[in-house]
Length: 120
Image 1 (cartoon, rainbow, N blue to C red):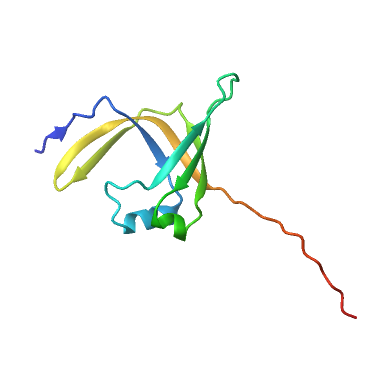
Image 2: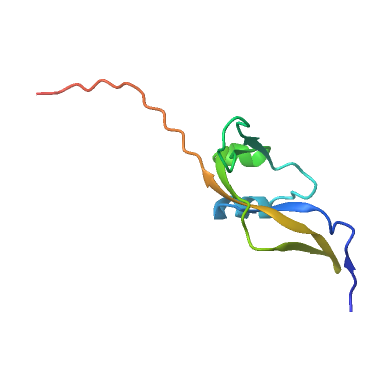
């Protein structure tokens, strides 16, 4: 029976649901130990707005191929969950889920003025 590495047992992790196409691209790349995106968490401490606003911006090659900006809604009132990883037969406990997020594409629509000409 294999031992579980518990060195990260006290860590808090975020569990984020990605759009399928983004997951496919990230899984197809050599992405281990690379920064894939930046998460920006914005909140106003003078208001009671909960949860904070989150945006995700892709970095690297994926940012050239896919939409670059995503919104993410956080839910902190979740059921208890834990994250494990397995690599080359080594099983590790990575931490307890403290936040759950759901990423969605942020569409930016640019409207330009066009002129229509009527032909008679």
